[in-house]
Image (cartoon, rainbow, N blue to C red):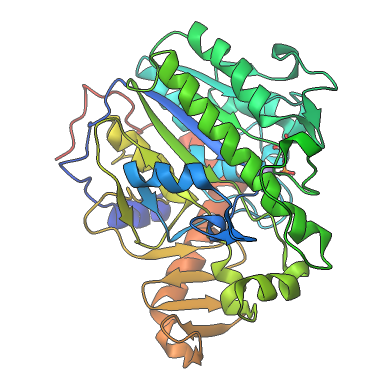
Length: 411
Ligand code: GP9
Ligand code: MN
């Protein structure tokens, strides 16, 4: 009957943070272009391999965007689909399995549904089979009006590699879809080329692989570099089509690309041993928010994918006060430095907790677990509450959520 929601609601409302007055509604009515960057970890930003930049375009783009350099992915076995779930719902994925498969029939109040109710056209674009990750079913529950999938693209041997259509061609053909969409639109682009095992054709090699005995790590860098090129060309096309100035562009990494199996080589590359402390920090992924007319700024608050939904809704001028969600607006002045990963690890301003050990961030050394104690309960509570919502389909019972910009003003 939903009585379980009472505690959850109380927790969420107690943790609600007032949006930043200077940012609330700043992008009202603008198109949203959300780009999921496959397997893109934050350590590649402003980094070189063999003396060459890995992400020359992104390194420039962050200078004219809000760049969050302490932003973590929170995915588990559901990989890309988990990141989609977290970003659109501001709920956590599950500790095992993929919520896209196990709970696609639930009631949600996801970003696409909310934006539809606010006059947006909503679409996801991904040149893969529509049933991969059960997207075709789950997208209906999330409120996507249109899914541009494999049949919407001209895919052939020449424009494919590894998992499928190459990112450059994917974006090129997607621009045609964008042009036809009713405005304003909320559009999600899911890239694919930078996917394990990181295959590329010779002609798409903009930089040479890393040189070690580990093929996976070696080949990761050229595919990240390729994706960076695809993003550059996409932005150029958005400008050419007159879509750039009317859109906010949000790029984020979906999850790690280099697993813990490669710690030894990663340690060589980074020049530091990959301890559990370092490994947890390698779960940082880039988050870049470009708003036309805004100057660049790096924001180092500790945050995670869970925070994207309220951040975006507030930029668009949509109140979230009554929403059941666990994230906090990244621009909120009193946003806490805190994020919890799906395995229960968490990161605060000064500490990092993983595998029952509390580390001091300044030194990377284990410290008295008491230092992490104040956040332990919060980390556990959030994951448990989110699981209760998903397993119990509790949003069925919640009718209170605000969706209309004009009806409810923030105070
Ligand atoms: C598949 C793509 C990759 O459509 O999103 O999925 P992943 O293996 O990264 O979860
Ligand atoms: Mn992925």
